[in-house]
Image (cartoon, rainbow, N blue to C red; front, side):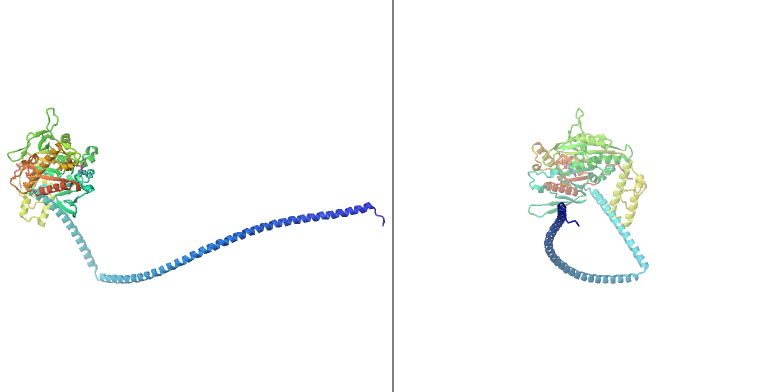
Length: 601
Ligand SMILES: Nc1ncnc2c1ncn2[C@@H]1O[C@H](COP(=O)(O)OP(=O)(O)OP(=O)(O)O)[C@@H](O)[C@H]1O
């Protein structure tokens, strides 16, 4: 082997060794750096985990705190709930005790009921089928007789009413109807003299039934005293014009049967006389049917009269109208015309004829052939009627208005009807001596009544030819007839008034005084008639002189009392009701038919 190694080779060898060492060192550094990086990563991971752990610990601490506070709340709620449960348990046990006693009681009762049902069952089982049927038949018979009794009762009531009307007629009583008007806005107005504040518009007059008015009379410091007034018919505030007319309608038939008829509205100013006789003051503003419904007695009576005449033979009746007013104790003919043919009220006299009847010479009559002609004439002259506003009534009538419809009749049918009525009247008179009101006779009457339609076609052919109940056959009669005249007087009186309340002065005060004096004269006449005094002071006023035949004569007179319902007018209303009561006491001459030439052979 060579002994000599060259220096370069040794140097190279050393470099090689050093390079090898360096590479090893570098590899080691790389290794360490890698390790360091891994450690960093691990450290980051650990610190992340530590942060999470810390968060979790914080959250756990919070949760713990929340849990402990929730626990506390839950514990207190539990305690409350527990005490509530205790209370409910206590209540339930009490309720249970009640229920148990109730159930025991129910059980006891149902046991008793069951026993009763069993007893009833056993007693029912004792009855036979026949007995049941008998019972059913008896019940049906009882029901039937009850219905019959009800029917009889209704018929008796109707008959009582008819008999009362006949009695009123036979005794010559004045019929009095009363109408209580509704409370109206002007009732609220205070007058200086009414005094009693808001109480003055209080409703104190009431229609308590169809024939009784009640007045609550209140005196300061005293109990309310009720006064009752009875009339043939009482209309309450809610009753329509139609209902009011319905009750006077039959008088129109009487007119055609040959009786004079007078319908007179009496009452204090503003109590509704013109409303009742003529109709609503707003008639022009209403439509056709509303207008008709709101019409008063005068237009409705005219319509009814012509309706009745239309059922008679043509040309058998003629009608004339006249219109008068009594103003300041003077009679004025409102249809009279001046030299230019203009309607101008002319003064007229009232005279008493040799037969004792009152008459107005030269009174104007106009021939009319239907109801609208009558109303046209009346409306055209109504503007001549004296009116004046007062504190009580803004459109107060200052005169008494008398519309007369004179009917001239030559109708054989009317005569036949009159004959039937006369026959009925004679039968009625006879009936007061005989006991015709027995059930047997009543049945005969009913049969006769049912055949009334046939008898009207040939009145002389039937023995009982009357529309009313006739007891026994009357002899066959024949009739002769001549024309006769009857009159229908429709009177709208001026209203009585207290000067202090109405606040009038000057000429209106004079009018007021004339109105009051004529009404007091009317009252005096009624008083004299009621007391059968030998002298009846008809001539104390033009009004009573003019209406003498209607008030004291043989006409059928109906007084329509109009009253205001409020406390404010109570004095005047009581006066009117007193007037009506006095009128009812009058027994004047019984109504007489005008066809006196009627001869019964
Ligand atoms: N039953 C009623 N229903 C509705 N309104 C009525 C009634 N009665 C009267 N009235 C009204 O009351 C007011 C007075 O009535 P009305 O003119 O008829 O009184 P009067 O008695 O004629 O008075 P006067 O005597 O002063 O003329 C009117 O406005 C009328 O329309």
